[in-house]
Image (cartoon, rainbow, N blue to C red; front, side, top):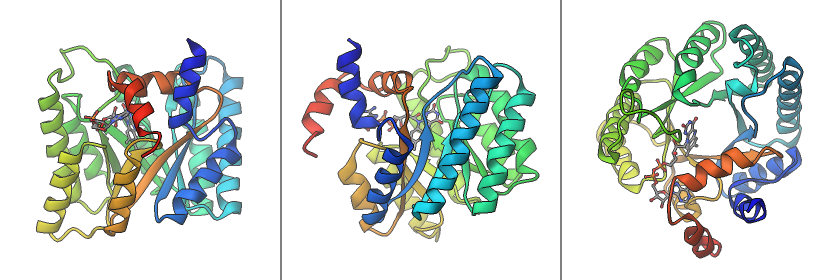
Length: 282
Ligand code: FDA
C-alpha cells in the first residue's frame, strides 16, 4: 500500500531533497509562475526535531537566494514545535522569519487542524507586530474564519484563504460544500479589497472566475494578489492564469515526510486515483 501511495505522492511532491524543490521552483519561474516551498513535516515531538526543521528552513532560504528562485516559503507551526510549547514554536518561527527578512523573502504559516487555530493566529499576530514579511492561512470551512479574517486584516496581516484540508466537527465547521464555497467567496472578496496582498488558494474554477470578475469590477490589479495552487493539480489552469497576466504561485512541497501530505491530497477527491492517471498527460 505504501508503495502505491509513493507513486501517487510523486505527482504532488517535488522530491525528497531541497534541491528537488529548488529545481521545481526554477522550472515554474521559467513559465512565469512563482513558488512557495514547503519542507514536509508536522507534529514534531522533541525540541531537537524542531531544531532540525529550523536548520532545514534556514538552508532552504540560503538555497533560494543562491539559486535566484522566485520563491517564498511555507511552514507549519507543529513542525516548529507547537505541540511541545507555543514559546518554542514562536522562537523557532522568529529565527526563520528574521532570516527571511534579511533575504527580502516572505514566510507563510499554513493553517493546521482546529486544535491549532487559535494558537496559530496568536503567534502570527505577535510576530506580525515586528515583521512585515509573514502571512498566515485561514480555512473557509471553519465558521470562525470570517471574524479571524477581519482581525488579521485589521492588523495588516496577509491571508491565504483556503477551503480547509482537515476533518472538523459540525459544531465549528461547515459540512455542506456550498457553505464552504460561500464562506470562501465572502472572505475572498473582503481580502481583495484590502491592500494586504492576499493569496486566493483554490483550484475551484467557479471561485477563480468570481475572483477575476470581482477584482476587475473593483479596480483591483491582477498583480496585487496571488492565485495559489498546489504542485501537480490543474497545471494547464496555472499556466493559463499566468498567461492572462495574473500573479500565480505554486506550493512546492519536498522532503521525506510525504505520507500525511499525500493522504490529505488523496482525501480531497474520491476519484483521485483515476484523476492522477488521467492527468499524467495534462
Ligand atoms: P475543491 O476541493 O472543490 O477542488 C476543486 C477542483 O480542483 C476539483 O474538482 C479537482 O478538479 C481539483 N482538485 C482539488 N484537489 C485535488 C487533489 N488533491 N487532487 C486532484 N485534483 C484536485 N489547507 C489547509 O487546511 N491549510 C493550509 O494551510 C492549506 N494551504 C494550501 C495552500 C495552497 C496553495 C492550496 C492550493 C491549498 C492549500 N490547502 C490548505 C488545501 C485546501 O484547504 C484544499 O483542501 C484544497 O485546495 C482543495 O480544495 P479546492 O479549493 O481546490 O477546491
